[in-house]
Image (tube, rainbow, N blue to C red; front, side, top):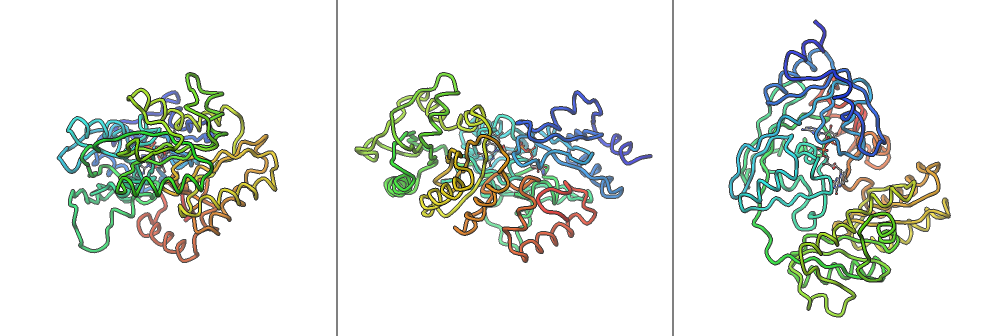
Length: 436
Ligand SMILES: Cc1cc2nc3c(=O)[nH]c(=O)nc-3n(C[C@H](O)[C@H](O)[C@H](O)COP(=O)(O)OP(=O)(O)OC[C@H]3O[C@@H](n4cnc5c(N)ncnc54)[C@H](O)[C@@H]3O)c2cc1C
């Protein structure tokens, strides 16, 4: 019996091209893959049996959650078997300080389950209606509440993981304190499905934030935005949950391309800020405070429509970077100048999670022919500023070859050693994140 025939006996599956099609296309159409078999396990045991067969037969397998990843990690490019976690979709337990969910639970459903229990789960991304917890943890997702609650990694208490050879590693504890040596669960967070398949997670829950307010504040430049961030963090005792930067040119694209949007007021740059804000804290600033949930939604829509508006405007070069927050103003000036030396017509649209030092440092351009050279200029400068060339989207295939340029040889050696130890036959998402 072939390996594929054996896998078909383990769990629900599909070979139907029309069912497979949406799983092998990335949402923007940037990546197209192919698979002979879509596995649809609904229990940890089924994942375990499937991986044992993959390991024994050397059959490559790509795990997939909501297929919203932006770096190609979830796409089978070389006829690998595709394993969707969509049916691992149970909420196993909700307590006051944690929730236990299976990997395929959609992020918005985790937020809702927490809310129904009178608690708060802070991870929040524009893709939360489709992205899964398994994908969020495997990409160590960020989003809009990192400033106060941290990245996905910081929200995890325990994990259940199926190893490459099918053994189940049960680390599904909900303890706040557990100082018993290496924290093994951390290896699988941000590993993009290359070290194991996450099947369930115990996640931290919080009290619902009190007195939240949302403000849209005009600032002269990124330097003024950083000063505003510091001032408002001081005023709120460090309780800001979001601090997003929006450039004038970005808002203009939103107003041009996204229906039913309007400019709150004119300014060269804007900060969208959330936290226990009061009008007094904003003082004489050029600012509005949302007076209703509808106004809050309208302000967030301006921020969350930036990517779509940029896409509608035409080709763009995108960089998901982070640098130390205090260096952001200097970085923006120097990196824009360096890119425009090579591509004078490049129009900068730098926006995003300023409070986390993370910018989507993008440019609208006439064509994409200089994509690689521009990425090299930006990422080299990020390195010179002590930053990261992938702040929150991960490596996947998009940045795999760049990883070796920006990590030290020792880091790469240790990453490869980890991969070889946990997946000696290189069957788990081969070719993603790091070459074997
Ligand atoms: C509109 C939009 C906005 C976004 N905004 C943000 C943002 O603000 N911040 C951010 O960080 N990201 C953002 N993203 C990217 C994306 O949503 C995140 O990376 C998300 O965490 C991926 O979840 P997913 O379930 O879709 O994973 P997938 O895309 O299916 O997979 C992503 C990676 O994880 C692996 N994987 C998936 N499930 C498992 C599992 N159970 N075990 C092991 N490996 C697994 C896959 O193999 C792949 O390598 C955005 C994407 C879109 C489309």
